[in-house]
Length: 400
Image 1 (cartoon, rainbow, N blue to C red):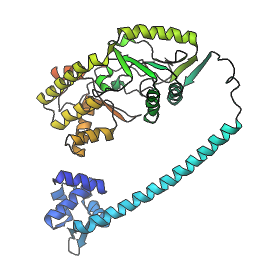
Image 2: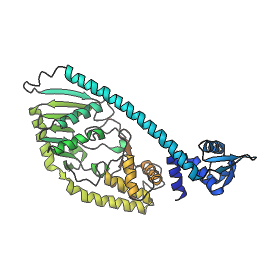
Image 3: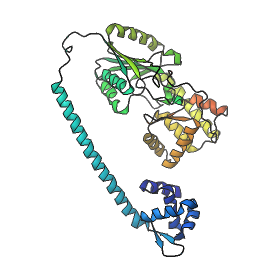
Image 4: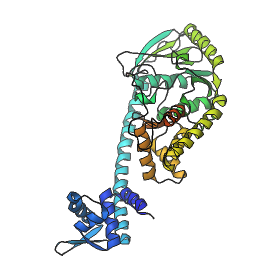
């Protein structure tokens, strides 16, 4: 095991970086003064004594009665098992407490649900004729809940027109584009119920958001230019419409929507969709060219001096599309890269603007390879460069 690998594993166990370095230094040198540990482990002199006191308190080192005091490492076979058992017990106790609190909360929610279901009066229109209705819905969570509700009630077809936001603008991802992970199961439930789904979007979502490794439904088609899609909406069973509106006081699109139940209005949106759908290109037309472009970008990354981990991380994100940190690290682990190496590459590519992060949903995504290739070939981005890829700043709140 290399020293870097040992440090990562000691940090996982509970030591900080300086403590991990100090413990390895003691194991290699047998006995050292605090000053000696600091010099060997590259610990700032002002921190050395604090680090050694902490390491001794945690049981990884012992001091000897010399002047100045010297330190020896406790044998790994003695301390690691004890420390592991202690940390495991703490985690198990916290887990039990969380489970108990969660169970209590679930029981309260269930009691409220059962009571409300029994006591609240039924909607008087349930048994009457269907009326045309319109609602204004505000806030991301409410819009997403309405969107998911429409999908759950679908009987035949769900149509969606959307376009990806620009990740460089650091705006929240609106629910018309990305549905929260906890609600995505309702999409799969609808597909299992044989609900037909057609998604129309912009080609720029590949591979930034969708990734190259996609083959499952819904059926997808793409338009090339941003102005080809002027509004984002969801149409269900040709009778329910959820239309994205832009509130000038909100941070971005996706925070105000208009929900309508009207066959007349739905028919207008359906006609509009079918005309755009005819002009759209299927996913099978776009993927081969985009796969080639990602390969070209990765070759250019190598040529200008980016490391293997940097190239692998960009390729992994391009393959998977928008991913959480855990998914990204798991993919890098399959490619034989250590966690710390992957995190270092992630920080570097974020700083240079070659990948982006959405803080609200904690998703990482690549900058589009066409932009990356241009920036690399023109010298705007290099491994040691500081500025990000972004060349313009658009005020928040405008349609991406």
